[in-house]
Structures are given as structure tokens and as C-alpha cells.
Amino acid sequence: MADAFAALPQLVLEGYRATTFDYDPPADADPTTRVGKERWIEVFRASIPEFSRRAASDPRVADAAALAARFAASFGADLDRVASGDHASLFEGAPTVLKLCRLRDRALRELGFDDCFLDVKTEENEKALATLPGVLRELDAIGDPGARIEALVRGVFAGNVFDLGAAASAALHADGNGGFDATRAGLRRRPWCVDDADTFRDAWTSSPVGALDEDALGDVSEDVSERVVREIPSPWKKCVLFVDNAGADVVLGMLPLCRELLRGGAEVVLAANETPSINDVTARELIDLLPRVAAAEADGTQTCVFLEALDSKKLKVVSSGSDLPVIDLTRVSWELVDAARGADLIVLEGMGRAVETNLRARFTCDALNLGMVKHPEVAQCLRGTLYDCVCRFRRPEE
Image 1 (cartoon, rainbow, N blue to C red):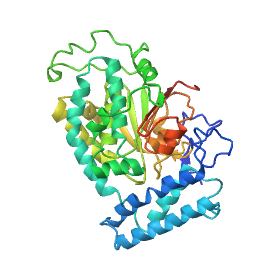
Image 2: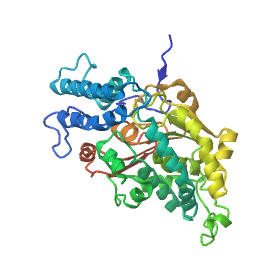
Image 3: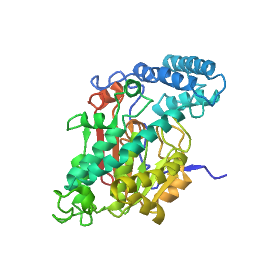
């Protein structure tokens, strides 16, 4: 019987390890970046209150409050076993972010919590759709191509703060302090802890395909609604974008980046989870969301990039095959494998897919990792700070 999963075609398999950070580092590791197993386990333990709260209020599960308490006790006990080293019956080998994420999601699903973050995802999608036209108009008003590209990257970071799997960003959301505009305005000043934004900008604008004439973007003094917004030609023919969370993350962060690539002539494949996990958007949800995104763009900006791309099949959504907030690129769906053939840019977004996994992955094409740092432990490993930003761009085999 054929395996249900395969490796992403552009992934360099030699030396590939999905996880970025060692969850049980040797005692002689660099003390300035060393985060021991106990602290990684506490990252997951700190997520229990938010997961329990969402599970307890899940209207789709009978006796949700009692079952949520069982989840908290069960997953807490599992973490105790991992801490003591008595985890052979839970998973094989040493603990990793992939294994602990699977352990947590399995504990929820076994109790009937298949998507306990659905309501907050739906609510945040509605808020983001209402904000989208204004965000797109702001971007379209930026005449300088390099400045627009940096604004797109910053938008991805601002959207990525909507992450209910990290205790710090979950608290921001609960306090009402994780709004897109406020987060974008308050982003860490550059240089970020991993900062290849200039290299990415130059790759987009300096190649023979992507180069622009000085007047290509028109008179920026004109009102954007009264002029044609010129595209920034894409040097990439097909781009695969791995998306992360619902709400502002995908709608206000990744989809504007997607739109600019489409407008520049690229085909775009959006890869999203098959199965719900935390507040990550699923492929099915994204398929249903895109027509509403296209309508919001058309009504709010008088442009129809999304609508035209959907009609022409230049934009498609596929399932990555994943059921976790992190991803092993040797185990993606055959649907994604087929859709990704010929892609010359891979974009991984989010702390889980782009930082905690795959930050050091190598590819046979250009690759970009974008994510906001929402765990102090990750920040320490990267010699950064909480809410620092990761923008890693590399050419093949770099």
C-alpha cells in the first residue's frame, strides 16, 4: 500500500531534520543559547490553561467542562512522564516539538475535542475581513517597490501574533492587545534576530524579471483609488506558501503577500492544515474564505487580483496533510507534492512551521521563513527577544 505522505519535491533530504532546537541539549552546549528539557516542557505546560478554557466552552462537545479538566490532568501527567524520562510508551526517542505537539493534540482529540478553537477562528476571520480593504489600500499606496515588500513582510509578522498556542500571545489576545495595527506599529526595530529582509527584497526587485522601471508604479502623489497600481513583477513563476493561523495571520498577513506575488505574474499554491490544530486555518476553511476575501478586495480597492486568480486557477489551496501546528516536510500530502512541482519559491510562515521546525531546512529553490517569536525560550535560542522577528531567505543550497 502506497504511503499517504511524501517529501516536498524541493526539500533537500540529505541532512534534513525537521526540528530546529534540541529539546534535550548536552550539558556543555553554549549556555547563552542553551534551553534545557525542563524549560521546553514548561512551554507546553503553560499552554494548558488556554487549551482547557477553549475546550471547556466548546459547544460541540457534551460535558465539555468535565472533559476539559480531564484533558488538563492527562496532558499534565504526560508532561511529568516526559520530564522524568519515562516516556517510552508515549513516543519513541527523545522529546521534540513535533512529538509534544502531537501528544497534546492527541489528548484533546481522544476526548472529542476535534476543533475547540473553531469559534475564535471564525470570530477573528470576520474581524480580519472587515480590516482587509484598508490594509490593501495602504499597501497599494506605497509606490516604492522595496518599501512595499518590507511592508508586506511586516504585515506577516503583525498577523502572526494571533497564536493561541503560545502563552504570551494568548494573553495578548485575551487582554485585547494583539490587534493588527497596534502590533504592526510596535514591531521590533531592525535588525531582527534573523534578518534577511533586504536580501529577499533584492531577490524580488533586482532580477531581470523582477526589475522595475523608475516610473513603473506611477505618480505616488495621486490618490490610490484614482490610478492603476502597478505590479512588482515576480521573478518566481510558482510559489508555495505554507500558512499558519486563521484571522489576521492569514487574512491580513499572508494573503496580501500572496496578492502581490499574483499581481506580479506568479502562480500561488496556499498549503494549509488538513486537520484543525489550535487556531491554525485548515485547507477547507481557507477554500471557503477566499471568495469572501476576493469580494472584500473588489469592494474595498476596486482591484480584482484574488477574483481573477481564482477564476484562472492561478491561485489554489491544497491540504498540506498536516494535523499539527508544526510540520515535517518529508511527510506532506500527495496533493501538495503534485501542486508544488515546478515551484521556485517556498514560503514557510509561523513560529511552528518556519522557526521551531524547518528554520535550517535546505531547498533546491529559493526559500523564505517568516515568523514572530512568541516563546522566550525560542528567543534565547536565536539570541533575540520576545516578539522578535525571523525573516530567513536563502538561495538554493545556501
